[in-house]
Amino acid sequence: MENKCTELREKLESFYSKETFFEGHLHESCKHAEECWKRLDNKAKKAPWNYFSLPYIGKEYDGKLLCVAANVNKGGGRNLQEMCIRGIKAFDTDKERHENDKYGEKYDPGVIESLEKGYKNINFKNGMKKMGESYGGTPLWHRIAVYSKILLDGYYSNVADDFKELAKIYERIIFMDAIKCSPATIDSSIPGEMEELCPEYIFFKELEIIQPDNILIMYHNGAKLIRGKYNPIEGSKDFPGSNKDIDYCQIKIGEKIVNIYYIVHPTTPRRGNRTGLFKEFADFLIKSKK
Image (cartoon, rainbow, N blue to C red; front, side, top):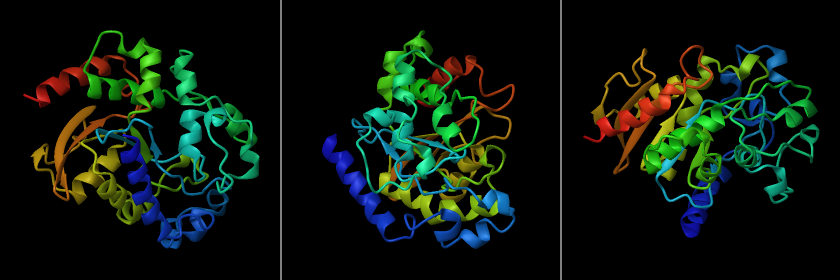
């Protein structure tokens, strides 16, 4: 597995090195910056954190599961994803990282440690505070672990509360965002131009390099973008259904058949944070494999 992870990182780094992703703020350095940011005001463009972030790759990743969200909420930096998940204390110092100085050397514990302590709402308040931002935490990371555990190992009744097992899941997955920019807007909301151009430029190429067996995506528009790029060979042709909290299709990336599972984002009002979705997803997996 270690060789597989190393090989994958090298392929991704080779792709990134050919572009301008690490040459400054994305709203200044990206070749699509002018078009993607044209409808955003100057305040949104003054995002000191808006640097490209590498995907997080677990040490035991074996090609089975890639998890995808929309974009970082007011954050960025070359190794942000790994620092968020592992915590700064477990992260080897990288002198090349692009974090703004205010991001600080003393960061939050990270997702893995927070899960081990039994937290369902993961909070990066120290890092956000150093940037002058407030943050109430998110259930996203707990939910990613729960759905990943169900998908990889099958459902069992106490999956959501077995925090030691949930923490371990992060060594077996890749996590990344479909959209790389993080505007200084409410919830770092994404303009349409960014959703149209960014995936074609970066995200789809990352998918073609990674080619996982399964993709778990909690970003409705991102799931639609995947469907538009890779026509489903099995499953819903309107994937994901507008009123569905869970949906599924199969696509072909190169010669590889990939299962795509959409689950509504946990912060979606009245829908995404229901613990009943755990069993619904487990039951859905059983039906989809028949």
